[in-house]
Length: 225
Image (tube, rainbow, N blue to C red; front, side, top):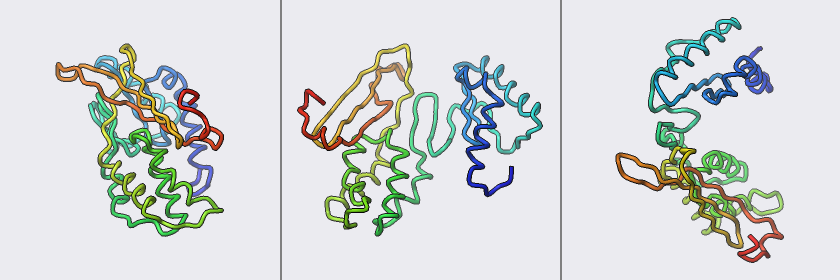
C-alpha cells in the first residue's frame, strides 16, 4: 500500500482489524491505524495476552519497532489523551499550540478550531451550549463577525482545555449517577460515579454529553425535554 493515497488510512485500519478479530472481540485490544494498545486488570493476565499480538504480527509478515514500543505502563499518552488506571485526561502538550492561537478571523479557521475542540467534548461540561454561537457563524448564510458574546464563548472553550477535570474510569459493577440539565438552547448530561480512591469515597464525572436543541425542540417545556 503506497503512502499518499486518500483512502490509505481507512484501508490500513480495516486490514489491521482483520488480523486481530478474536482479540478485539475479547475487549482488551484497541487499534487505531498503527497504534496498538493492550490493557488488562492484572499483570498475570497482561503477560499472557501480550504474547498473542507480536505472534500474529509475525505470522502475517509485518514488523514493529521495539524502540517505539512501551511495556507495563500504568499511564500512557495516546491519541491526544492521558490514559491511566483511574482516569482519562487531555494531553496538555497536544493542545498547547491551540491555546496560543489568536481569535479565528475566517469561517475556515473557526471550523478548524471547533473540529479540534469537538474531539475533546466529552471532557467539557456544556460544550454544545458554549459553542452554539460559534457554530452559527460558520453557516454559509451567516456573516462572520466575532461579537463580544462569541469571543467570550471562544475563550471559554480554550480555557476548558486546561481546566476540564480528569474523567474517572468507570467501574461497571458500581452504580452510576446521571445528572441532566435542559434549557431552551440545548441538553446537557453528566455521568458520575463514586469510587474508593486512597481509602476515600470520591464522586467524579467520567463523561459529559451535550447537544443543541433542534428548532422545534426550543418550544418544548422542561418536562417534555
